[in-house]
Length: 242
Image 1 (cartoon, rainbow, N blue to C red):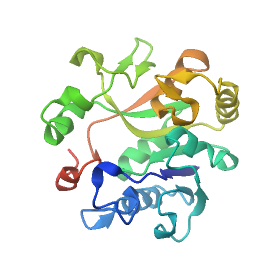
Image 2: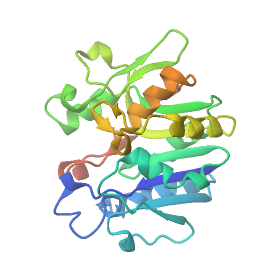
Image 3: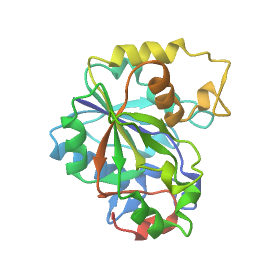
Image 4: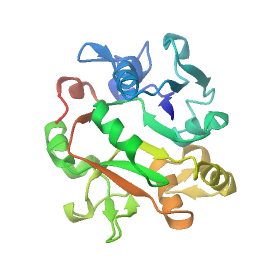
């Protein structure tokens, strides 16, 4: 089992805390965000970890992990960052954003998932969103799941709460049996096209997962009931996982 942590971004909404360090190095509850992730990985027995750095990459020095650099971090998005480590995308691969903190139990549930493409989905998202912002719909995204237990839509702007059967938290797994197909699919996409209004290099991760759903293979949720938090604004640093 390999884990790839996407830690290339600055996190401009956390300024001035990120003026001299990337978002993943900001402290939350006495530890740097990335250390929370690394500790969860260690607790689950994951030792093959790749950290993709970018903004102020020299500040991020973590022993025992492989380092990869997205030199175009300031002009690309999460998906492009992930594929900077394409050579490391072998076998079962867990992908984690670097601005989320979650329990080892959440990570374990993802490790144990049997489907080819599994996405962690929080069913109790609304409690966390209400603690973080006045309007829960403002920053929430769609998550629609069919009767077969497959995700059919994610990452869009919801028109109502009925469009949200949970929230994608920024943590997913691609199995060894699917990883080569997913990589080939990425390279088959039209690099001159727009994807949800973004050019290829700035495609959202959720846009790519939606394309996988629509054109390649089923994507399944791994449901959780809280136990995590996204650190996106200074106010999030004062909130404990719901």
